[in-house]
Length: 175
Image (cartoon, rainbow, N blue to C red; front, side, top):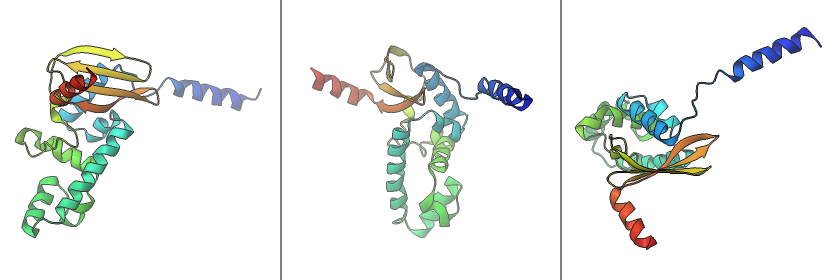
């Protein structure tokens, strides 16, 4: 065989073990999401959310963008400044920019937009139950809230957050 083939094989085998994406269990993913949020790393935060979840976030953000069109110019200018985008772009703010705004303002309450991502899911809390199959996992917290995970490209990603009230309602429906 030609030396070029062996060099290619060597490069491929070296590259195979050098991946930056860790395969984490759901509890590890939750910790990564929490850290990314509180360290204000929007791109890393989004890495651990399923495509479906990001689609729901994007759909809600479209509604938020539409609501900007009815704001008075002064309010729009102030909001654009808080979000760190030019007024001319606020109606086209990206999901990453919106998440970054929420991260920066989480402690003031300005960033808490439950429909995009419920911050209470990120607050430290004891996981009281963990269930997992090959493709879906659920973490249940001491307050009854649940995080649902799905596998995408062999990695666990957050698919859905079920708050305490919704979890109770689901239990009543199942009985």
